[in-house]
Figure 1 (cartoon, helix red, strand yellow):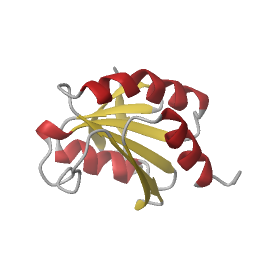
Figure 2 (cartoon, helix red, strand yellow):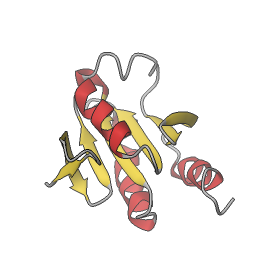
Figure 3 (spheres, one colour):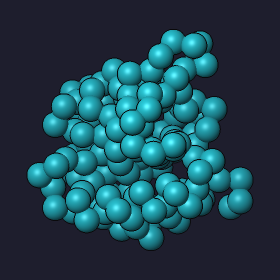
Length: 125
């Protein structure tokens, strides 16, 4: 896995799963990812290893990310985060950020809903 990097040349602490999918385990990882993707659309999938719905949506989430290389994606483990996941009351929760601000979220494991909501936040909509 490769590390992400910030525009300030400070190395980000999050790991890369693929070229546009990050793995986030801590609040610091989350902060670094949001800062790194501030000028892009970013999609964060908050889930847990014990959550069967999270496991079932994961391959679909990766497929969506592969189809949208211009967008930054991340998988966040809520069990290891305190501040970043404090508003997550359901897993999986997919949160969409534009210019560093939350603009939408999808509760549950619906690949089509994620795909649609991501599309709505792009310039293509």
